[in-house]
Image (cartoon, rainbow, N blue to C red; front, side, top):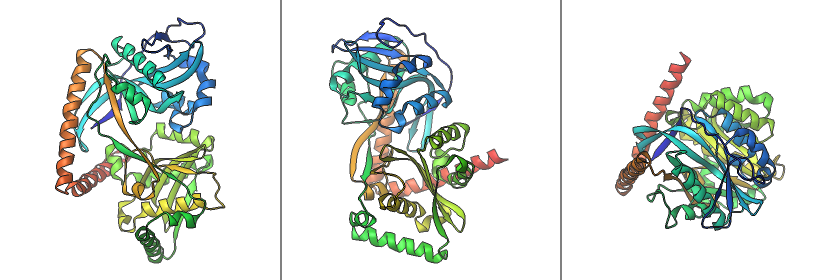
Length: 427
């Protein structure tokens, strides 16, 4: 399993061989009648903004969010956006970027070693427009050309759906470059929201309903009803929101991984931009005035997209995270709800609460295509070995029913590491 960290610098001059296309490098897709253009300069993104915004359907590939990430994420060198044309008409785009990163090899949560790489990163939900096999093949032909030309050591596809045409194009026979065959795939779950709170609870098993009602009653009884859920989403509420989120996040195991809510300049800038557009929703559970759990996300269209969550382990016996989730879902199902949300996308990874609440699911995985050079081939071999060892270890732990215990120990150590990092920073 790999994690990616960004660093370094890289640049490439763009060309303009086709007058009717945006500035970039045009490539004839040999297997299709399509043509592709690569946008490599930030100033040239404006030429494709109208069609991008007409096609965008996910907060991760929203044009404003994409350009904000380009400007704020460490290690990003330039855009790498592929546009497919049929004749002179744009039909689709694939949003990506070139960055300088470290390729981290891990087993479970434990890092083994890392290597610096130049990487073409194609973002989650960044395939916009016509999602046909023809277009996917055109995109992959273009990516292979870029890697053969030495623009990067590898191409990375972030949480790619395994049932999509782009994945099929990567896996197709006859590709010039090697790609991942052994995948650590995960379920991605979503929930269609019922029209009422009663209908929502009617979708749950009797055991889950009973348990959640008992937990809520226990929590309110033990803290004399001084339990509140607040949604901080307005620009004037952000200072308090950041402070309260940090009180919780610094105690979570995610902080030890460098994941979840990170209270840094980049996060503050992105969340401030989301709040200014009315998209941000930061739900926080308070017990006796103390922030205990949070669930952050954005509303995009009619979908609430979960971004991060966490809870104070001191209150673990009360299941504060699940209590908060249930209260937020109740609000979203209420006839008096403020948002016209009809679906929740629970985000990356799987968890028990997602299995309980989810009504839709699909498989996805991080996927790599490797450049033809010695470094690219070595990275592919090393990742294959790393994935084999990681999956063998996971399989052994699952067969011996030790995986839950090992996860608890690892997460406890990661919480301690996160607390130590926070204390060091504060001093």
